[in-house]
Image 1: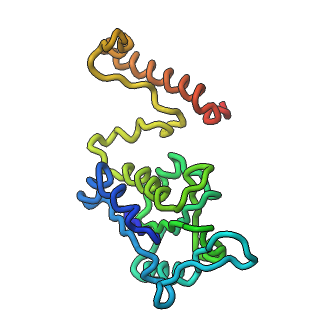
Image 2: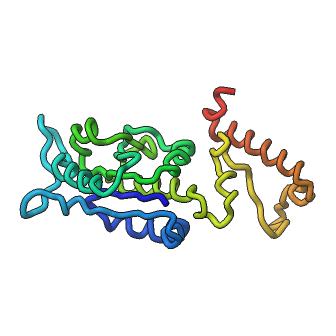
Image 3: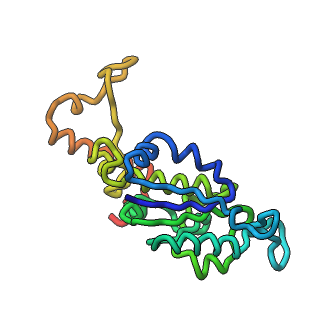
Length: 227
């Protein structure tokens, strides 16, 4: 089982994305456990403060080190973590090999930033890995954390009904997926390629591979840049 703790100041943003479809089934089957921790429970003072102005001035608030450190230390007292991950716009770009790697972990912490981010001392001394889902900025790290949980959780053995399904996802073999078709064989005058109706599995596999290579060349040429 994979255990993931998500630290956030907006826990309600994560309830729905992590409760349905594949992730919901994974939790129901006891294959994935996701705990959402409200950072404000570790906030300072009567108002549970978790942010303050940045030293040196400038617009925006910064998440304070004390609440984050106290929260992480409390979690560490219960289990050992493989990674303490900060969802950061300047982190490593999430890709399929990274998702594969994280799916083999036992315990993860995901930290969702807000405002202008978290105090750099937490990044330097506590965080073990920083992950980005793209070269853009979100209002907070919650949606990015949900993406990571989805990408990782579906790879846990037993989560998908068809155990081989994940093996043929886009990017698993450094190629995007080939086109797929279903019934009817002709719709609106548009026909399914004859090869897919031939029953010749070897020829079908070759066609799918060739299509995947061509689609990758057209849409993600950087993946093939080392060829």
